[in-house]
Length: 225
Image (cartoon, rainbow, N blue to C red; front, side, top):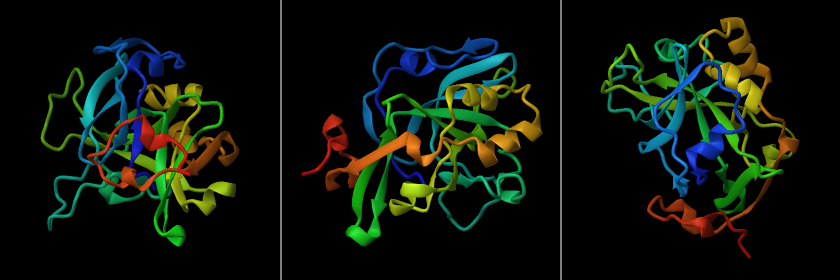
């Protein structure tokens, strides 16, 4: 799963590796975001699909269909295996976005809920596939706007950390995910097969202060001793 991640670079730095199709709407700042403990229900900078291009905007992490009752919190993750068949995602699965990140955290229960920080071995930006509802040129902001990160089964060494992980797309595939012209069949293929393999990542233990959403700062991603 993905319940906490890092988004520290500037939006402009995240956009640079992408070959976006069409126009990029919205502001793309060169000021570093510097969020080392992004938590659910907070507003996150994302790139959303847009007719004629993509849009830079902030969006709440968490989404639920309007008919969900009982006070259940919005979902923060969407399982790739059921994204196309579950009624829960019927209103959101065709509205795609990318969540740029530097890495994410997982907690290993067998080690006393020890947190780990996972990032690209080459330190490159990560692009999480996501779905949700959001403002566009033809859709005004609404109360049910938000997003969930698509997750898949972990493989190889990542299984030692957690059995689920975010669907991390290579830059070229992330561009396909964002493009409204990409056929549905290809989008389903991306969700099933196109996440980066475990050998693209490295991970290390970090301190338990990351467990408190109020804590921020680069020290959170430093290896614990």
